[in-house]
Image (tube, rainbow, N blue to C red; front, side, top):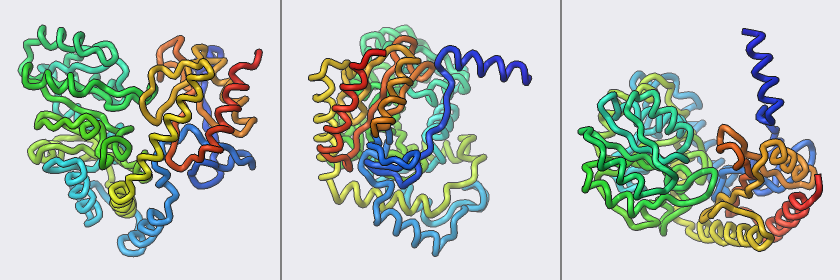
Length: 386
């Protein structure tokens, strides 16, 4: 085994695919401390700038004082506490569903929902650019998986027409996390009744960001349909941690009884749930945060496009910069960090070969001056000769 580990590490290094962690030495924000240097942070999912919000911190402190920190057990043993129940009720109201269920991460939520609903007789139709957690969940569910080209509704419908399965489940990201593009949800929703299908929508990068009230892509496109199950996360725009599934009461009752990641995982700390409730309060009370997020994203994206860079059709706060080669991408990331801009490079297997990119993500907390400085550094760095 030691030989395999050494050989595999060498292979990854040679291919430019070895990974390491970067240490952020301050609280999250538009500017952070790294290696003693202040840098513009442009690869965080803290889209609304809530991770270090004073009201969020105060909610956590109050909850710890009242409930302690750890939940002590899984939800079905002794781990269910009032903040968990209150947050689930709040999430259901926010997403306008009958019920919601907390999970410890978006990965857990997708894994727990998909494996609970699918089996060998299920046909699953999954967008090729869906998140890795969806891909893994589909494999573990043992369903028959049919993948369609990214956002190709005609291709999806051709697959649905061929299916003879009693249970058909379409799965798509609402916002594709590496491209910043939106799923064609109106067209997909139009297929549900026609083919007696259910849609599982991964709204991780839209929850809190899209729609008039921040409810996500369904609100953005004004879609309401009983055959849609929503997954959202608490650790991105909401600045907390964890995830949830929102849908019908029967769905949630089934997940409580059958979802293995839910059943066999210690519950989220109650203080984490309390901070997410406060974050939802801020999301609903301060729509100007979403407006500022979209303004900043458009400003940053337009600056890159005017400079001739390919942003892969981004429509949201996620703005990729296509660089193609994996090794060069990571070199660009290193050079930018030296210039005070932290944008992480994205390589295979997260994206396909030849499509490596710098994945920038913009926050409502960024200033125009900070974004302008970052744009200048990016343009200079990517135009430098090797």
